Length: 109
Image 1: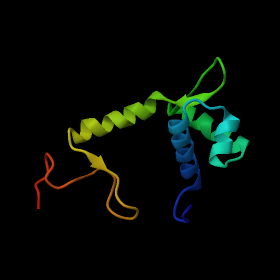
Image 2 (image 1 turned 120 degrees about the vertical axis):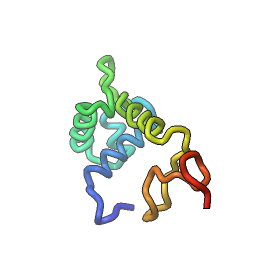
Image 3 (image 1 turned 120 degrees about the horizontal axis):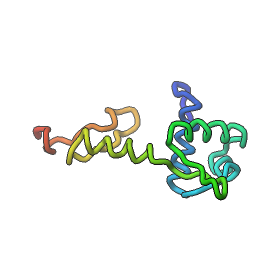
């Protein structure tokens, strides 16, 4: 469900990343069909994500997959949080990256 206080293009780009994460390598039309976006919008968003390294395009078949920038971001979690496990908050509560009580670097209550 879309919320009014969100940026639509960001939601769409994240939908594309999540679709590629779940499906592997896909063509533009396949990404569009799975996300419910029109092909032209999907193509523009994929081009922007590719320019930033979040997706890569296979030159042999023109299909897209997650890029190395996604790994770089994930690696940043480990660097900044060490061995502490991160958890996503319930919708509307806290921030991503909160550390649970009693874990390294955070006293228990």
